[in-house]
Amino acid sequence: MAHILLVETPPDDESTILQEAARLGHQVTFFSSDIDYFRENGNLEAILRPLTREIIYTERGAYSYEAFERLVLAVHAKHPFDAVMCLHDVHIVVAAQVAERLSLPFLNAATARLARDKYSVREALARYKVHQPTFALARSEQELREAAKRLGYPLLVKPSDGMGSQNVSVFRSEEELNARLAAGSDVLPRNFDYGYLVHSNNRFVVERFMSGPIVGCDVFTRHGERVFLGVHEKRFFPPPSFAIAGSCFPCERFDTAAIRDYAFRVLDAVDFNHGAAHLEIMLTDKGPHLIELNPRLIGARVSDHIGMVFERSIHEDLIALHLGEPLTGLKAAKPRRFVASRWVVADRPGILQSIETPDTTAPHIHSFRLYKKPGDAVIPPRINHDRVARVLTLGATQEEAERLADSFVFNTRLHIQ
Image 1: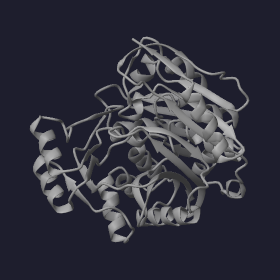
Image 2: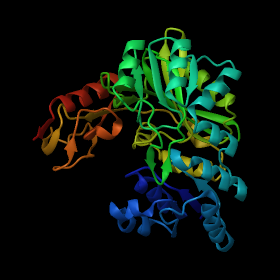
Image 3: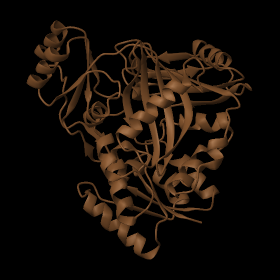
Image 4: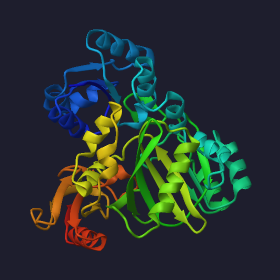
């Protein structure tokens, strides 16, 4: 039985890793920099307390790495930790720092800091001569205009420490950029609140806009040894949305070996030595190009897809990875089926009244989950947070799984006032 420090989790994603740890007989101490979030959504009493050994947190306004470390060391002195885990981008750096302090397996702190800044990742890839779009840094409107002149159009602008497709903009011409800036549009939002008492660093990466199919891939690394888990094909809603419409895992439409080799070069370039990584990659006419690197397992419950396909618990593998155990079983795992996800979204703004769906108990339906409830405001999807519901379907082939998911969404009706 191990004692695990779990540093924060993404919204509504607490139960999966905690339930798996409990099933395996491990004890978990959970840290949050914003415990009121869990109080307010009811998960503090419903999920966290029943599934954890202890909950430690800093009060609002008192969060700092030093305060976090003091809490961790106090627990460690009485009941030593065997592993540190973090599933959320915003705290991956402090998790890496405290893991180094405790000499526990985790991504090294230097790479954790680098991976949380997209511009720094681009610089590391440039030094390693990894193919990617041309890029620049912008910290002001003046620097944005200078970058645009240097790089040319179309351009993509996104927060260097962003996540979840928030505050991403595309400009196809100088006229479009000037119009947005003249209209007072917040193209470079300052001090953006990511939640958990963490705000943006006010750095923006400016890139030439790329086109091509988008895929994701997950890689487990144990002391430099890498295991490639497979390729997710990702679908996005039409522009100007940056929200993901769905995915399929595994994907057999593209050159998996080329994607794997490219992903490994990216991880080598940033010295990714231990932990899970999720990479988003665009397959351009010049080959794979990195969209972004996330120093964690794929989120939004999509990690469950990997477990369904391999018929094993990917979270058990993740726990074993952070305990420093070999990846022998995962390396030998073979995909046994295909899983497709599709998201239901609003076609107009309003208040959700009700939702009608096909039979959610059909054998090919793995699960259906609502992310909005009647009475909630809904809008057409701009970012992932705007989506209403998700269906997961199973198939013997990629085409079958996708067809079943598309049919479910086509026959779902949202009633919006």
